[in-house]
Image 1 (cartoon, rainbow, N blue to C red):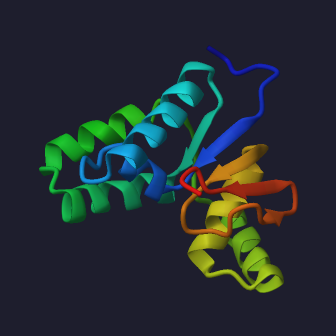
Image 2 (image 1 turned 180 degrees about the vertical axis):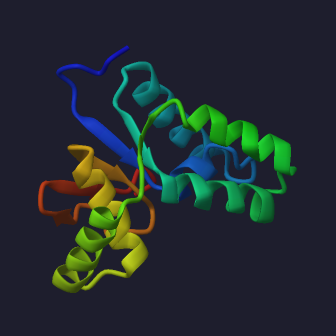
Length: 141
């Protein structure tokens, strides 16, 4: 589906990882529902940064073997993926300086902004915080 007429949503790696984490079933279920719904209606967005962070976390913290983690990244690559470019890095630096975020968090916001996302689903950024046209929502709050 195209997601036409619907607002895009950006997923931070922490939400994606929870969708695979059986140690916290309620968070797993909530994350899976959000991700599946956004995938089904064509509004799901991630970035190259998120794909990399997700792979590393699935292997190191969740215990996936390398191939199972790679399969997850292949599945997530069906979302709209914002590639990391020099202009995106420069925008992230600007956001970092203006909003006093870490560079990596600013890169999440910059990627969401570049993809015209309305929402960033993240446990790490402040729930309800707005950065320009992007609002952060903690799905577990």
